Image (cartoon, rainbow, N blue to C red; front, side, top):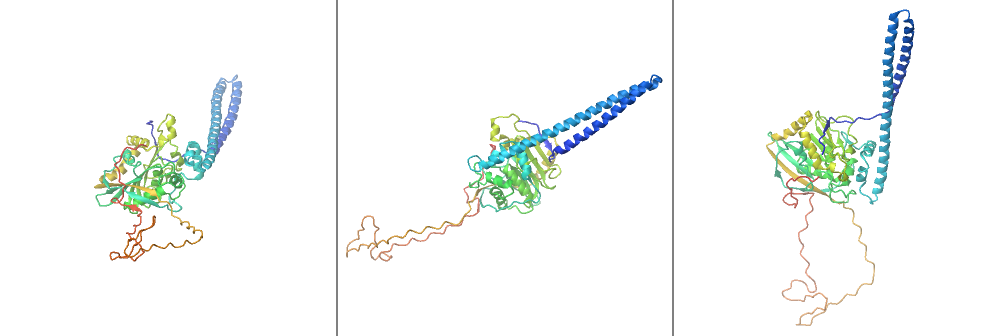
Length: 484
């Protein structure tokens, strides 16, 4: 693990190679002007030295002018060197961008082949082709940043929400404690309700990342799949996002409530969307390994944790052009594992456990922005009561019209089979394989020859969209260390 943290305010630096080459040209012009001045100085010095045979003072002045000409000549050499360096730097950046464009074209081709089902999801394939290709593709798609006022499009997919049992808890002590509360495989979202001394409520929301990496066509029951990843990244409604919003409604979170959001990976995308379009007063937005950056306003403290060797976070395209969020917002970068190894194929740098370790380093940092973060988290410490509920969900398959039942093919009608009639005073004996026939008798209330119709049972109750704690087999499990 690397302990080198890079904490900055955010924003990207765009390299304009045309500007670099224009600057190099200006240095070239200056070089030529300086060389002309040097040539003139040498000529003047030569004339002074020739006159110095008559007047000694003039000879000395000519010698000093010659030394000045040599010094100015060195400045001309420096200008020429700077010009060459700027030209070379522009060429290197253009070469990197060309390679990145080629990589993105390969990614598009492989992704198209993956759509046939013969390869894993194009999302995963594209990530494996390198960060440079991802960055160029993101800039071209314009999908790495959630802009203010942006809303999801398309239909809202149906989901079924499962509600866990309430449990008492305490406020998070620091960033690592808060990020460590993001659910693992036992739930999708955890919502903590804080009752403040004045009776008002605040809410901390912890949203997990992708769970189903093999389902990316929207045909699996788990909404936290690759299909939701793709839909959210492209700005469309997704089942994973719908589960979180249903959970907020089930927890009774009203519009305008103060939220403290934590999200990992896909959960970071959802947290960013809620901060932008949820209609809440988001006090804190913490994302870890999120493929998008939410351009929140000055009322939200934004904390983004990114690992430079995590290809998922490179989908942000570097983020916004300038800083986002309230004063004290920060982008924290670190190389989770500086030594390349086979485990990198498993995207270990993207695991939640690695990001919790990064959060611990932020907590221990002397950077004043870490202090601002702890101040905002400390607002929850005044709560008089804290309860937590975990929620999970499943994707509901869309119901379509049933296909018509084919009519039976016409055929000859079967002749009715006469029922045997018992002789007076004798019991009826059914023929082998036939149903018994009821005869008249004082104990029978059913007409002769008719079987009693079954009594109707209670009608099945319609399935609810939300399972309540006392009726659902789902139970919130105690928090355990995250495996990834």
